[in-house]
Amino acid sequence: MLLGMTIFSKIIRREVPADILFEDDKCLVFKDIYPKAPTHVLIVPKREITSLAEAAPEDQNLLGHLMLVAADMARKLGIAASGYRVVINTGAQGGQTVHHLHLHLMGGRSMAEGMG
Image 1 (tube, helix red, strand yellow):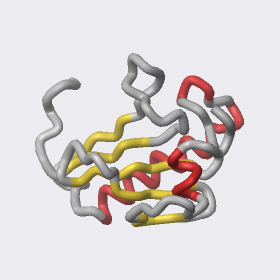
Image 2: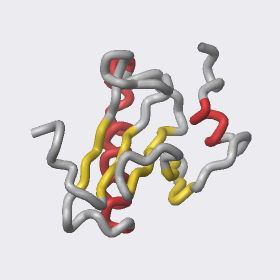
Image 3: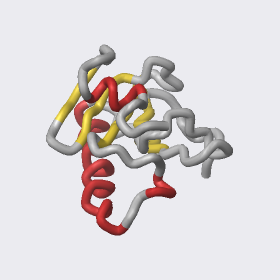
């Protein structure tokens, strides 16, 4: 896949519409169009990294920033107190369908099933 051709890159460039909830110089947060929970947003770095497996040591600050944005968005979306899940799917068997690293922030219902 060519760099910059994923659906997320197109959303970042505003070529494809999305319900954007937050943006800074490093990432974009928008609602998932196929939500798996009452609250389900995606946190996408503006710099394209194919997957977590492709992240490099120089990505450490960006990855930490994405996690802090997830926690802040959980507070803003009203799911922090009751609990939430942050997921990064990596590779085909990990369920990754868009080859641009992204975090799923989900909550608003019990997320206890499936993972410890």
